[in-house]
Length: 237
Ligand code: SF4
Ligand code: SF4
Image (cartoon, rainbow, N blue to C red; front, side, top):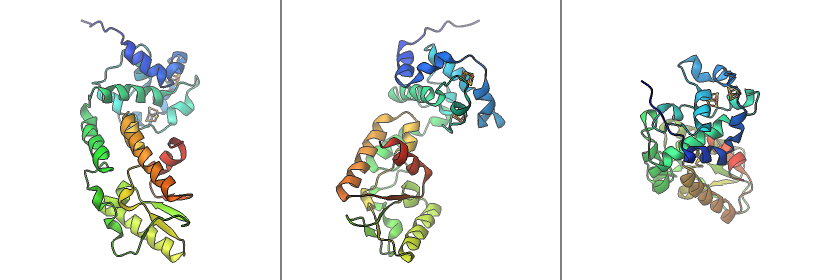
């Protein structure tokens, strides 16, 4: 027995506002599913998700809406210019709005709360963000310094990635580069939480970081995380 599902105007509007209008050009060739890396390890159809969204039939309880890693492969291969990532993010924004985090996305709500309160996704204290630099003589960034070293959340808290932060600071010192950090004023770049559809937390994090950059006269930023690189180069505009 099949169940009739009423199209949701809210989903259709969300897809449209996210630039998903191009989904109407999809002619179901399936190339996006063929090139998607997920299908090397398990079955996953972004074509189906885009199709459902364009008709307002997305199911925000479906674990598959969290599957796409936004790697960028399928949009670059689509012969009809469909923006699969934007459509997927529009559906995730709806799920976030209603607080529906199923399956593999169960932790997304807690991550968003930690980012909003402490500026990192790891439920760590903001006050310990600069503890990695104890004893290294790393200075707070001040106007006139050459480079702001933006350490990132994992560089600040993760035991293995802290070694990268320490090595980077030592290399800069050895090379005679004048640099500083934002210390406990640094917040997560927000790139990953934005990919879950939580635009509100992303914007709050971005505003705080941008204010810190402007207040201190930052002109050049060094990052070790590809997420920070993507956010600063392409999303903080
Ligand atoms: S590659 Fe493009 S046109 Fe082909 S099924 Fe996917 S979204 Fe549709
Ligand atoms: S952008 Fe998402 S759906 Fe497209 S190929 Fe990458 S993981 Fe698959």
